[in-house]
Length: 207
Image 1: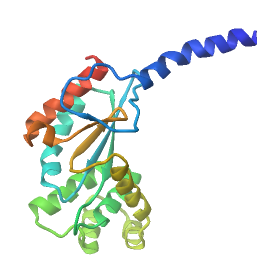
Image 2: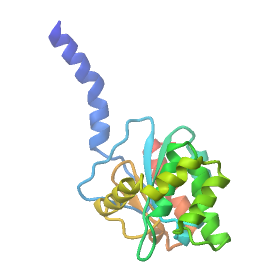
Image 3: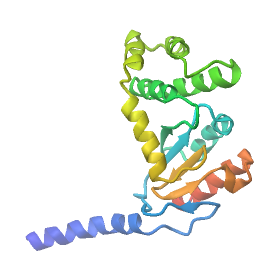
Image 4: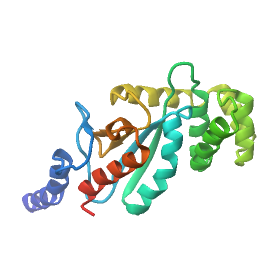
């Protein structure tokens, strides 16, 4: 009986293991991340978006994301990993993580981009971030946690992940565990980048 049970377990798990180990024939422009495995359970594809709230290309790519998600309803698990370069601050990323925890991540993301690119505000300034938090309905504890660095470790982990995945520019997407693509692959044409991302996803999901 035990042998039959183990055989049944192996029969159920083997297809998933094979899927995780071997990538399908992927179309589009991308690089395979060294040391990382392709992962797809046949249901949803994980997409990690490395972005900076100071990044113009990230801001421009923002309008493409609903289009991409709309083409693959309930098929994508989209995560953000906010990073910063040079003289940027970790505080916008910390503000995002606090908002995400409160179920307001998307609102904070849009508000941060608007504050920096439209309103020309310093999103590294705590007072500016507190004002943004108030606008999207974050409570008083948002300011306390932001000033106390409650999400500083999470912001550092995002930077560590960027190094781990060898991220050199933003936005960069890591798709299905080890497929990396960024606007450089599309000549920095953001519409072509969107199309490239969808080509990669179609190759995986077989839509």
